[in-house]
Length: 362
Image (cartoon, rainbow, N blue to C red; front, top):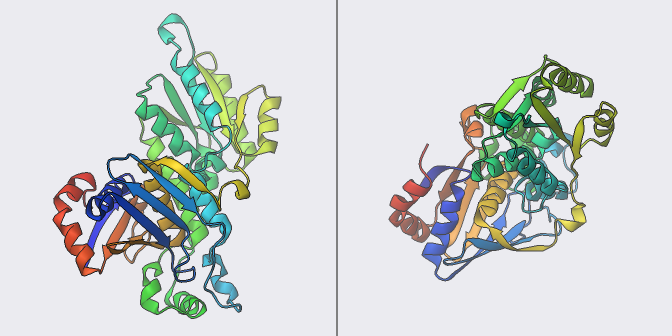
């Protein structure tokens, strides 16, 4: 069996490898263990020498589960909301007000502290980490090589993420019940063993994102330990009182109530929101950059545990979780690619030199 561990961003290399071994076009149907056979969650069309792809997202998840599902395993049965979140987190479907955040970054970047201007800092509420909005921002800052804009991390935001995270694990009994409900063998779902339940995977992604941002040289962490709006707001107000002469702050949140409290303190706020689910799923996205398609594969693999790419050359599995997955795999955004199709395995092995450069191994 061919297998390789790759990072989220390096999944672009896998997409390039698929088009390389397929011809001028490659059509990919993406399946999960939870959905009925041949009922994809989304479809991808790739073209040779084209940096973009077309993505069609299903209008609903057609689940293969039985009508009588044990309450214990309901937390692992996906809904349309999970497909919706994958599209949002990968920026296939753009969060509302993302453009306004970009404009604020561009405005901050034009300031010159040597001429007396204040440095601009963005800070984010918990939900901006949960929805992966912060990742889109740091990607923009780094792609544009912007050096005069900072990220202010609030300790209470990290504490709230940790509080939401319950560390619930999936055991053998859970998988047996899930296998029965989905009419699968244990082996088909064994990748879930001793891994986090789906909602905890979302929060662990948020925590890993917080840690990655903290490693950036343009970020700083501030505030006392705590959680909830009161602690987050208190830290932001305290920062402004102590350092307001040197820094301007803009806060990004999806919480309308919290935005109102920030406004009452005369703190600049950008209130983001998700587009309606009906505007996101059940539609086709044209000319999507491959990096976003790779992100969609990555987040779908984490959310659904495993996805299967059906191509003209055979099936490729991308496992977001597997037995032995550790914290560093989340922090480094690693997934596991496998295939048992001999013809496809042979072709992938022929390109493994290129894959090693583009994808790397862990």
